[in-house]
Length: 330
Image (cartoon, rainbow, N blue to C red; front, side):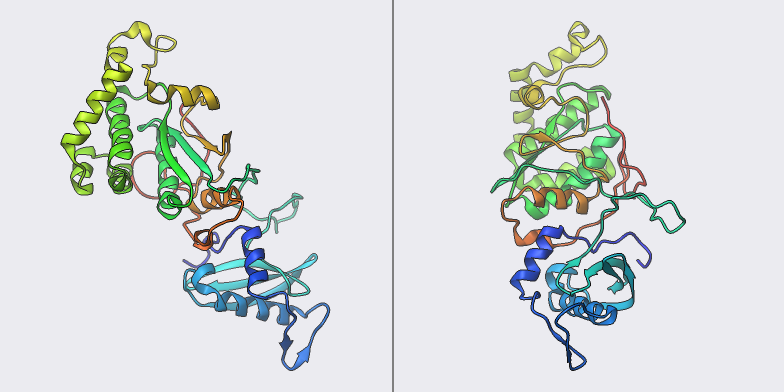
């Protein structure tokens, strides 16, 4: 939708690599004039838009791009483009070699031209060939639900390229229903993984676990058997019934991932661990989460070029978006 925060964002390192692969570092002729040094604003902008359209299936979700305006901004040109029905700002170097879908503001502006809205918080992540991504939540924590809505589109995109999973904080804060739902998600993910995304996508929007089990085609007998075994192994409901075991006398324990909670120092919902390190994801949008995971690859896969929503989901059960990505249950 025109005017929305840009969804035309891919990791700078990835698009730079794409430019190299595509041969975009070669100088081009603009209007019959071969420009070897600095390009004019119009020439650089035209080159950038041409490159985006030539690679629109991986960069712009198959949508056509057109140039609306171009201006000089410091050492780069700022191009205002239309991608599909959306309007976005991107940046191209004055020699026409590098295209940057977004910019990080390293110095605060003090005038009215300063940008507004929630900027992605830069993070550093350890790299690996097959990133390990763990999301720790409480299933009824409003912020955990927000994080699961962020997680799901990225999980669907990268689950075959990275080790991605939902895990559980080792105590609950939202009554017995949270134990029941934690077990649903734990068992479906563990034994009926092919149904997990469908079930969870339904639950975070409706909160109706019974309906979502049916809708996702979950084998309920298999689920009940798993939940029973898990309860016996970890004494989940016994711990719930014995208030003397509650943490600080307030919070029932849920021990299925206690070892991992201790290993990573998990202290609330949500907690995101990538390649063994707790990572702050802000904003909690699928696009930002995807970009952070893609930075964790030694060599990012082509799926990292796909564009996801840049809006943070609402907290709690239900659809919609949120202006805030702060908050956790702890």
